[in-house]
Image (cartoon, rainbow, N blue to C red):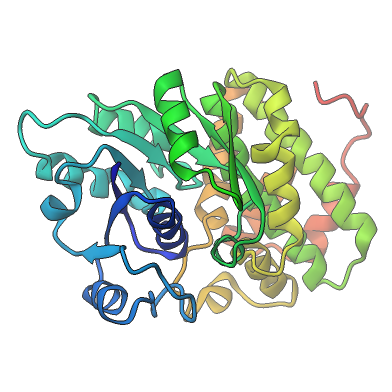
Length: 334
């Protein structure tokens, strides 16, 4: 099919390459002229995915009307804070009377200012399209290397969900399906906050016990909030929940864990983010998660402590101590 990937960061670029290798006619839209040039002329995205050769059939463009023309499948890969603005450009560029493509959201975050899920934003801006979320444990570099990877596509429209499954699946990239759009996206967004906490623990020089506790109690927080928002608790035991949480909290390729390590070693947020081209989504999501928790009456102690470290300058050691000295409770997540 004809596909377009909107957003040429590392994840968007790798997914465009997967679709191209699967035999689809793929264009990728990039905001940066240098990214367009390097993909088309050198077969590599030197800014966001250096040293990873791309398929010959992949075409990059900076013209949104050219990118979306005739697309049957659109992958939204912009950072979460930019999804509304970029998808508005898509809506303005789509020819009148053109068929609405299936839209696949791969951005893991919440919208600042509204706390909305990415599928909600996309459905508002592109109301004629069926919107699907794609999430799960998947470092872009390892997907490019062909390492076996499993993710999940979630949508209310079973045809759109299965279209996404078939479009992306191959011998190294397996896509499962789900109808839990809320749970799949919350797992993908909130695990980044827990990953910052896990990185902080590593930066403080703590061992395996604290990491295990943070992952387990982090999953409890995500599940509690997810249930309050209508998600199935079973989703958080799957790829978009536990799977992505384990990867992002323990893998050295994780941007959010890396940021946390720097914070645990004593750097400020500004120092930890200096010179970084890619977004650590957990920074914005920490504050949004706490807002969501308050709105739904759900306590998120790990997210609250991460927010205080990020935005109030709280000492990481004190945050860890405060988590340990909270009122004693049952382990039951309710």
